[in-house]
Image 1 (cartoon, rainbow, N blue to C red):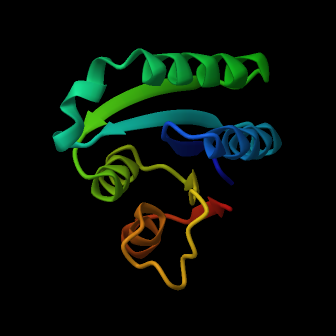
Image 2 (image 1 turned 120 degrees about the vertical axis):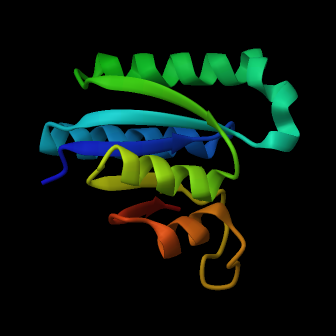
Length: 127
């Protein structure tokens, strides 16, 4: 059902919880995972940030240890739009993302809320 999972990752502790949910879903559906890192234009200095690289490498290793095929894509732009564009471009089956503790019913400006509105596929939001 879910051959390809798009997992947008951000530098936060919630990423670890979201990663475990993405791994569980991928194991249950024998899915390929595409991990996406989006750097906002105003944060270009973060592009070479070692903390982001470490997070990506550690998460990719965690997914690999679970026996799941995982690739990493890095893009620049506004996160919600880039996530939806990549989902459309790669014809993913589901997007698995966290909320950073945001209340989606009250915060229409959050990345997760925008992705839910614009996504070309189902979105699994991990609180």
